[in-house]
Image 1: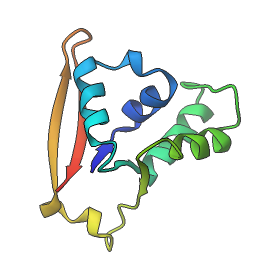
Image 2: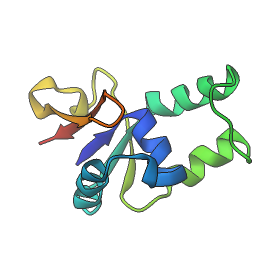
Image 3: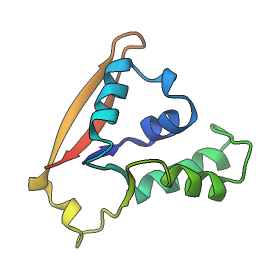
Image 4: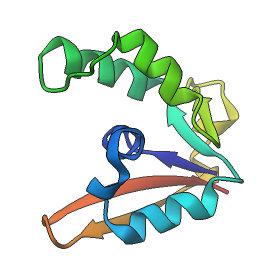
Length: 110
């Protein structure tokens, strides 16, 4: 399973062509294993809407519900008691988008 960064998740759902092809390939590769979305990402999307840095044509709650129903997507709880919060089970893969000179982080749960 990979855990998608909030911005990667939003772009994957809205228009995957905004993502580097190497990142899209990595997401597709893990679709059957699971694509995790942190509960914090849902909060972050709502906050981005609130401060008008992101907008949707539908209500944010409806968008989140639809986006969480995409193939392979699983909502991940990172509470201190959750297994997914165990740092030994998480490694980082750094994906670089050289065309825009920024890095996207994808967490992989082993």
